[in-house]
Image (cartoon, rainbow, N blue to C red; front, side, top):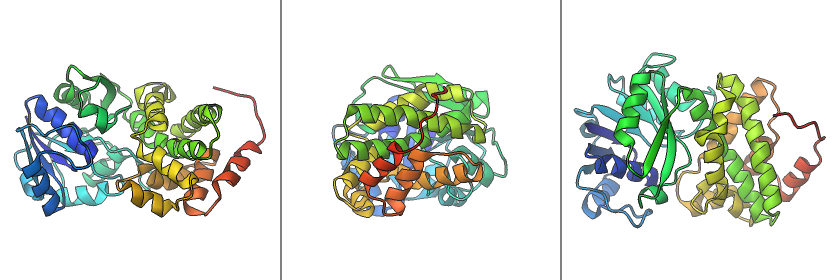
Length: 329
């Protein structure tokens, strides 16, 4: 197939290499003329050492070139950038694969819903998603990885499964596209909280509690998006939560750790130098909780640290002072 790929960050680069390695012709688009030229000539991503782009990949800053003749479109732009990019793309009649993870601020829409709305539908049968515990650094090295694919139309789920699956990149189909995308978005917030916890030296017990109660928080909130809570027990929920809260590659975890170590939120973001999706999604999740009267204490204190100037140590005290209720799973 010819595949138009939107986004040339480390995640987009790694997945584009996976697709090209499967024999597909991939045209990767980035807005920057200079960056497209750098990738086209050098064939290596400057922030992802260890992997060279196969010859089946072309890099361009010409959106029309990336879209022309494409049989499938894959996106890896930021969650905040997905609406403006697809407004520029316009309506398409080919499958679209969402690989970004987030919830749109103001609307509360999951990213497949954002693209569907641009295409004039609540649930476009052309839109699908790929999500799960996967860092670009492992994928580019062909280390064994398992993720989930989903779509509104089972035929699109099948296409995603077929074009991405390799001997080391194992993909499980799942019919719950909302749950798959919700888990992938929300885990970034909990990862920031875990980074803050480690940065304060709170220990493994604290991080285990944050991850477990964080998953409970995600499950409580997922029902407002009509997700199947059981989906969150799988790769796109617990699996993605584990890798994002514990991996040295996780931008969200690193962001939280830097903030706890004394960086301002903006200073930490600049030091990382790439998108930290939990910063954006934290606002969206807090909005959803407020609208539907669902308490999200970890999301709330994380939001207050990022946007309200709350001292991370005070945030820990705030969580510890909450009334204890019976654990219900």
